[in-house]
Amino acid sequence: MRDVVQGVLAGNDPDAGWSLPAWTYADPEFFAAEVERIFRPSWQIVCHDSDIPAPGDFHTLDIIGESVIVMRGDDGVVRAFTNVCRHRGARIVDASSGCAKKLVCPYHGWAYAQDGRLTGVPMKASYGDAFTLADHGLTPVEIEQWQGFLFVRLRDDGGPSVAQMMAPYAEEIAPYRFADLHALGRVTLRPRAVNWKNIGDNYSDGLHIAVAHPGLKRLMGDGYGVEASAHADKMWGPILDRPSTNLSERAYQHFLPQVPHLPAERQRLWTYYKLWPNFAFDIYPDQVDFMQWLPVSPTQTLIREISYAIPDDRREMRAARYLNWRINRQVNAEDTELVGRVQAGMASASFTVGPLSEQEVALRHFCGRVRAVIPQARLHRAPGTGWSSPHSLPFNGGDRGMERSRTDSASPAARPHPTPFPEGEGLSKGSPS
Image 1 (tube, rainbow, N blue to C red):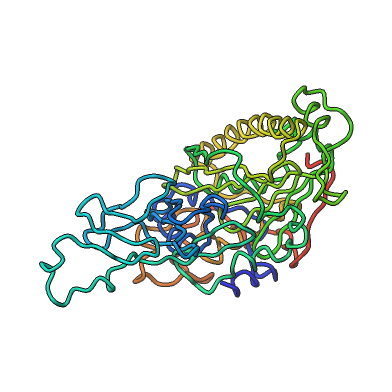
Image 2: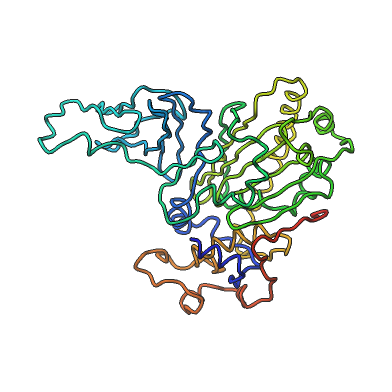
């Protein structure tokens, strides 16, 4: 995976100036390849350490057909397991969160300790002398705690840790005291009838801010910026002092108080960090949100999000947090319409790929990574059924059989396109319109 990322950043992608083809946003076989090659090896955020403070506290995460339990044991250690009984494969826990002294399968009563050990089996002797409890504990899942947030990974492909992914921004994030955060509410789930990539593409897209988000334009003016590093994209916008003409925005500007633990340059700055492949932190002076877009099917995605904050009972801070929610509720509504338009338009046979501006550095990077992991993403049209089978010939740029799947007169690689950005280079632009 490291070689893949370095190759993309070094400019080794001949299609760097072009989007992913439309068929990759609805094709079942491509989606199956994404599940195996992108999502199983990726880190997925579950909750914050403060969400499971006591022994027995747990949170669950459902993703790509797997259910994972993150649970604190009597020894204080947080562990992760698949939410699957080792007897007949039944799901053990249905709740998204809770507390339990032990986990008991509702099918046959197999019981597991908070550390995943199998501790009780009804009619144990009937399973024979060779049966031992120690051999049938819950299947462990890799877990990482970063800045208080808990992540799981289904398969280790040698990719970086979350800490390594966020290393370029560690100093920027440090003043926000992530480890001290506590949830402001509950996790919300919002289904969307679009491919997961459409949501991520929109999140990293700075060009649409001035066109489709008038509220953000009023708040940030021409100050919105975008950059990309190896494993994370960064977007940011300073909140202007000039009062907005919108009541909620003007009130937010007025009530947002000074935050003692933040430096002066971050008192009125909104910053967004999108991590590969499908989650992001929205960092405001008043709170921190995470947003995760979970793939459900080729054309169905579940947005999962929650807000966290350091306890602050000031009336001004309570008002600012409420107004933040009102402002971003409108932004979310605007984005929902936008990604729906894109998903619908991609169904047209007239659309294959689109050119990417030199300013769309984050989109260029994401598309390059997907093409590197699944090379068939270079094809304008979907190849024949079975292309992702292990028995199929590997794809390469000179495979004539693959190239015949393209119907356009020239492939993106044959057309002029801009050079991708070098590692660490970003863009701080004026009006993105």
